[in-house]
Length: 530
Image 1 (spheres, rainbow, N blue to C red):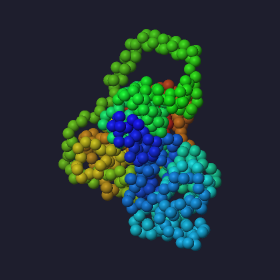
Image 2 (image 1 turned 30 degrees about the vertical axis):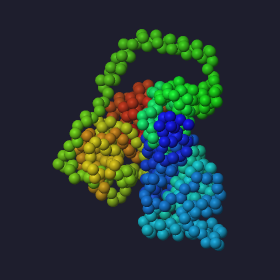
Image 3 (image 1 turned 45 degrees about the vertical axis):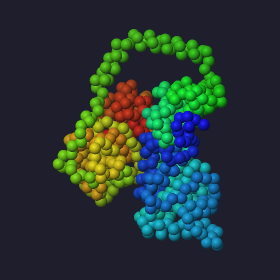
């Protein structure tokens, strides 16, 4: 209805999973990296989970545009299916013709095995992707596990991706599915968008739909959208679509906070109460309003009385805030000329990063005699951070960084530098042939693209450390913080000072400033330990 008014070619907030509209937030990029790594490296079973409406199905469809052209794919989007029906569907999706007498599971598995062997011998790979996998019965999941027996001595003939809602993790944890759960070597949980991603997400969809700058959303409108949606893409689409309709009826080109509030009210059916993201209703009573006014007045008086102290804190923060690396013209030193082999593409840099972490035998970048981490009891996850250039010297484990600035035309785009070691005034990078190469600090600072990826091993039980806790894990965190310039007393108690320094650390590295040491904070601290 409003597409012509705003100059769109199509509805920008359609709820269909169109891969053109996939916005690669930090979480969606990490999920895609996990998928590509698992498929290209033939890791067997991969599990991607996420809440309702976080973009899992759209991610699945976008994945097909990134896989190698030699990879044959079978996609299953209907998960209410029997064990026999899933074999029939898999063979049909791969284009395997079955004889007239095929009736048993063995007939279908034998035909599939023959197809996979022929595909492998010709240099191909095979992908089975199952969406809404949380709905699969245990019998079907066990049948899928049996597909892992289709392999050579060294490689998996088929890569199985299970995509499902958060409860899929609980399904796989069932004792009867222990053998399948143990075969899953790559896992990722897709989170909703963060507040910083909301504007980019909306602008991306407007651009894909053919927008040329109109309509625009005000900053207050974005804040209200995030307050209502908590970063859930499906809810963002719904509220933005309704807000555009409201703007169209008023012949407005700017989406305001008031329009978003009206859109939210419409989506709730005109209810007068405020609802939280999980649907629970919270009524606003006169008593509540009176208490809020009293609190605001008290806070105002307190703020005025403490104004000098507050100003002092802000000034001190500004003085000690890290400066961005100076943007200077790109000049390669004599040693750095001809280093095109150091500029790696997405696939090779990702595979090399996991190889470095595992210390794969034969990789020349691994120091002789250096003990590697035993990852048998861990799942390996990929985490990405936005890190300012001056902080790269804190990294003690292999990482890759996306490069920016003026680079040779012959290098892949996007391109990455795979770094295995940081020295005083240079880094040791790994080129495309696995050789160690020295790159100067000036080159790193000039081309630093801020997006840093690293591998993090995590167990089945996630650790979240918060104020008031007392444990050996807290002591380890305190020691790392203290060693990298965030002064705390390593006493094993998550006290007020530790909480303040955790928040300062999170602020410096663009993490959510909640003072809780969750997976992302823990992963970055892990990266800074010897």
